[in-house]
Structures are given as structure tokens and as C-alpha cells.
Image (cartoon, rainbow over all chains, first blue to last red; front, side, top):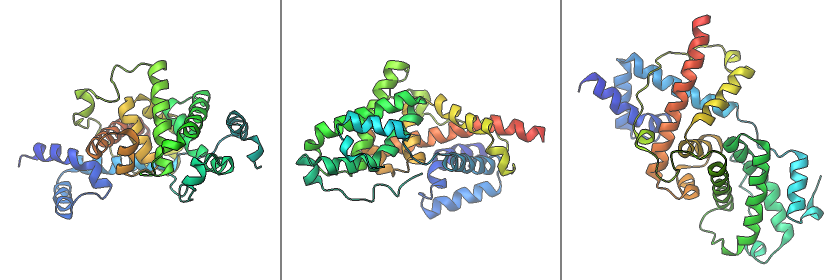
Length: 83
Length: 199
């Protein structure tokens, strides 16, 4: 296959590949291609890094106390507002 | 990501019988997740609070119709996402609808930025400017891609759960997630590539 066509095909599978959702045979094909294609290797590495950065910088889920109090009040649940 | 919430079980019978204490437990458990989703979707604390309140008001009103086929968390995410999408449509009408993304959204996007910025020191990624850039990049995504990215990669829902929340196929979730990630990678490559050049 022409190299650029291979790159294009890889692009369609990249997201599943980084999630580990591809069949082994397809992973092998991608890894074989990346061994010979620096551009695709860089795209895969930076894609993984992108997802990683979003996940590590994602704030833990919290609700500010005043927002929580207004929520319980709006729902008429003030009596269950545990501190 | 946070998937340790939602492990707690609630009595659907009690909720449907109007048990307010049980509903308060549900609110306590899931309000942080719903608030964070609202913040990421709208990028505005007041809007996030509105979404939070409307989600639980609707959940309380409609708990009788909850059929238990999905989890409580998926059901709440569905209500919250619909609220967020409605608010977004009112505030900044997208030329691209959520239900039918344009061809540009679904076409594979060729990577233009081929810069290997993975080797930067950790502190270069996590500056205040870097964090702001991450948020701006999410904000620039079309709504249909942003919501999928947030549910899958930030909230940690599975492909199936995301499909249930958005009432789209699992294939559509995968396609939109792929597009979202590639666009974010492209955006961040422009930013971190410049930092790499300066070093």
C-alpha cells in the first residue's frame, strides 16, 4: 500500500488503538507501520499525551458549599444538608 | 476521571415512593459530577449551577418514569447533558447541530502539526497558561464533539454509556471521540510546539 494511504488508514483507527480497543492483528499492522513512519509515531504519542494531560488536569468533582446549599434549598431538602 | 462514584446503590423503589432522604443521598452523591460536567460544557459557574438545579428538579419530577435499564448516573448525565445542550443553543447557537454534525466534523482530519512535544518537562505542561490553553481548546470544539470528549475522557463513561446518554450509536460515539481527540491534539501541538522551539 502507498505509504500515505497507510497513514490515512491509521488515522481512522488511532483513537481505538490508544484505547486498546483494536484487535491484535490491527495493532500489529499499526506498530509495523509506525516503526517506519515517524510522522504517525509522533501523532500517536502526542495524541496519548493530549488525553493524559486532560485527565491529570481535570479537577476532582466538587460542588462549592454555597452552590450545594442553594441546590438543597431549591429541592426543599434543607433538612438533609449534612455538614 | 472519576468512576468511584456511582458504585453506591440506591433503592429505586424508595425513590419512586417519594423517599426524600433517599433522594437527598442521590443528590449528595452525584451533584459533584453533574456540576463539573456543567462547568466544562458551559465554562461558566452560574450556568453550571443552573444545570445542576434543573437536572435534579427534573430527576425528582420524573423519577417515576425511570425504568432502571440504565444506571442512575447515566440517567442523570442524560438529563444534565440535555439541559446543557439547550442552554448552549440559547447562549451561542452553533451553526452545526448536535444531532447532525456537518461533513467537516465527521471527516478524518489530516494532522498538520507534526511536532514531537512529548519530551517537554512535566512543569511545562502544567503552567497556568498551559491549563488555560487546555480549557480553551475544549471550548473551541464543536458541541457535538465536545460533549462526547467530556463524557468519555473526563467523566470516564464507557462508549455504551455515552451512547445511551446522548441517544446516538456507539459507532457515532467512537467517531466523534476520535475527531475530538485529534482536534485537541492539533490545537495543543501548536501551543506546545512553540514552547519546544523556545527551549
